[in-house]
Length: 89
Image (cartoon, rainbow, N blue to C red; front, side, top):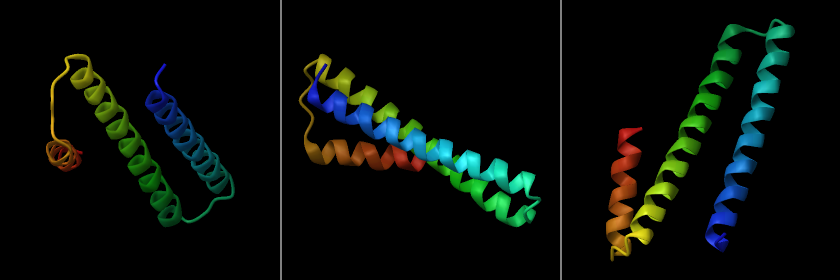
C-alpha cells in the first residue's frame, strides 16, 4: 500500500468518525425533543460531510486510475478537474 493510500485512508476514517459523532448528536437531539430547525441544521451538515467524503473518495480513485495508466497530467489540469467535480456535487 502506498503512503498516499495510507494518508487517504486515515483522512476518510477520521472524517467518517466525525460524521458518526454528528449522527449520535442528532439522535440525542431527537430524544431530547430539540427544535426541528436545530436538528435540520445538523442533518444538513451531516449530508454535506458525507457528500464531501464521497467526492474525496471518487477523486482518489480517479487519481489511482490515472497513475495506473501512466497518464501524464499537469497539476493545473488536476486542479481544474477537482473544480469540475466540485461543481457536480
